[in-house]
Image (cartoon, rainbow, N blue to C red; front, side, top):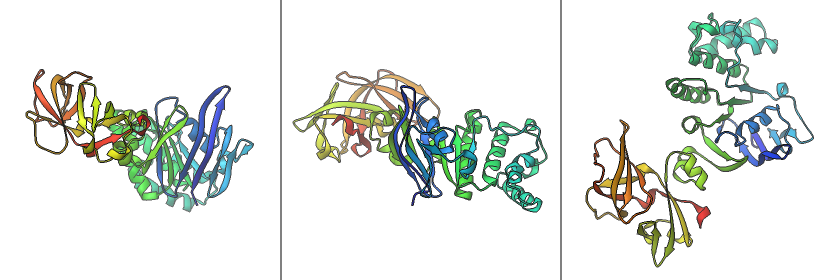
Amino acid sequence: MAKLQLSGLGKRFGEVAAVSGVDLSLAAGEFVSLLGPSGCGKTTTLRMIAGFILPSEGSIAMDGAALSTAAGAVPPEKRRMSMIFQSYAIWPNMTVAENVAFGLKLRKLSRGEIAAKVERILGIVQLDRLKDRYPAELSGGQQQRVALARAMVIEPEVLLLDEPLSNLDANLREEMRFEIRRLHDAFRITTVYVTHDQAEAMVTSDRIVVMNQGRIEQVADPFALYNRPRTRFVAGFIGRTNFLEGTLAGGEIGFAGFALRADRFPEFAKLGRRVLFSVRPQSIGLRRALGNGGGWWVEGRVVKRAYLGEYWDYLVAPGAGGPPLRVAAPPGDIFEIEDKVWLEIDPQRVAHINEAS
């Protein structure tokens, strides 16, 4: 039985369908991120799970028991869930320890139990030495840890996080991604995490739900989502990519400015007449001369470049014309603008987008 089950979930605000037809099942202890651009419906979905919004259609169940339908819902305080907001919402007039203990006091635990649980969780989130400080005396990352500790110490059945790192600077966000994952591995609380940041979702999640215009585009683990996107939207939203649109005829796929042998693509039998491929920049090699490998080779010309430290970002125009392709090359692969080059594309690392077939 699923820990959390969303079935045909939808929410309308007047004539606008903010969420439509969402079906999603979470296993106990799973970490799932809702990922998508602003206005895609991810936060509305999270707020329906929390019980703050009543769905217009469909249902939400936990452990097989209904939590929400269009007819009514279990109140948020009775759902055995904890939620962390963008603003952290920690009490400025309470110390770290008092903030963490707040939910336990509401549950009327004994002083001894509260003290033991607070001490344990503060040790896990590495705040035990700061337990007597007030929020104003903490960094943004430390305040985030307080919010996490307060949410986890009550041992919720489900943990909900609504873009919790959006107020942190870039370095702290990167640190806290790994911290959130570490805490999840320690407690194994079923978690739903809302973000528009793909890196956050990739680092923290067991599975990622990509949403667009209120609907689910694809659900997969980070590796599969990145390397085998099913739609143009997913391929373009998860990382950078090149889209190659062409037509299959006579054993070749014709693109703008070049053609490739169709039989070198491992899923050749699945190709229709119209073809759309997603090719990641790091899946393309830049060579000075034509090689004899079994992949695809395309002659080109460097038209733009930028050095980004960890790699070169090149734009290479196919020799016979057509839109330039973006290539990510190692720092040592130095090419000048207007250099003649060969693009080496590994068909095994090319994703076929089925919507074009």
